[in-house]
Amino acid sequence: MTIQHFLSLLDLPPPDLRAIVNRAIELKSDPNLVRKQNQKTLGLIFEKSSTRTRVAFEVAMNQMDGSSVFLTTDSSQLGRGEPIADTSRVLSRMVDCIAIRTFEHSKLEEFAKYSQVPVINALSDTFHPCQLLADVQTFTEHRGDINGKIVAWVGDGNNMCQSYINAAIAFDFELRIACPEGFHPKTELTSQNNDRVLISENPKSAVLGADLVVTDVWASMGQEKEQVKRAKAFAKYKVTPELMSLAGRNALFMHCLPAHRGEEVSSELIDDVSSVVWDEAENRMHSQKALLEFLLS
Ligand code: CP
Ligand code: NVA
Picture 1 (spheres, protein in one colour):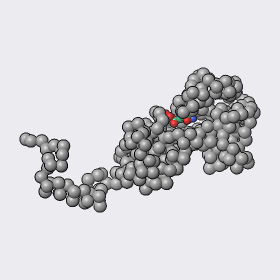
Picture 2: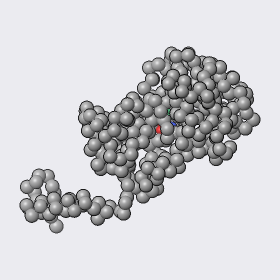
Picture 3: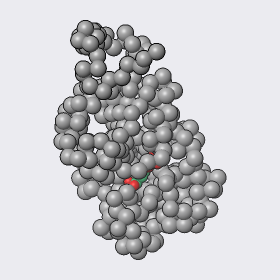
Picture 4: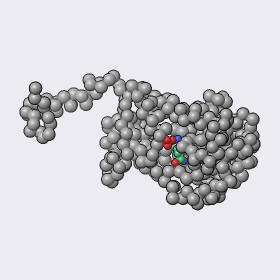
């Protein structure tokens, strides 16, 4: 039996070429002629490393009988300078949803502006909203509604901290942020929400009586060169069992992970009964599945 290759157009007789073009027109008008009924595809574009977010999205799509396509900047034409707007126009004609992990939040906004399908922030320098869905789910499972509760954020005013500010508005809780001067979250976020967001440079008063204590790494992805400077600035912001003992009796500890055990959080606290970091990580998958179901329906 001869195998039909396609190395040049002239490998196929003209009638076969015409038949393929006509079939393409037919498939375009009804994709379900060959794909499983309404099967969805998620595009993932990651400019930064990931374990939880990527696996959660891919497993979620598999479990929903869909599929995903993973791209990095280096392996795609984005790395060679294809404009974000053009990439967005092209990809959004082929997939049903796109999750992006990047540096500048403005890149996400630019991508979303030209996309025909929903775009999800899989982490930017400014926000990490998918993590907050999992955090709120985890708190709710362990302690009931987070509405009216006290949450203490100890550490950098980074993308996670800023997402906690948004969560305080959306889910209606009090947020006490303790972070050193020079590392505060964006002023526009805090000043507009000073009825429920309190900033200080005192981890002890932030944690006092809190229902949930949260921290994150001191140097986020992209800030690796500032590691030493940051370690000095954040030295008194480490979350330890002693600091946790000032929180409410049933207070929980969360960290989006990956953690630098012994740095922003003492290793023993991650493994303490008050820590729910593994549930939090698992919930990335459940909450992203729920988000995808919502956005794709
Ligand atoms: N928490 C979080 O987003 O983890 P990854 O960087 O592993 O995706
Ligand atoms: N603030 C961290 C979160 C990692 C999930 C970072 O941006 O690197």
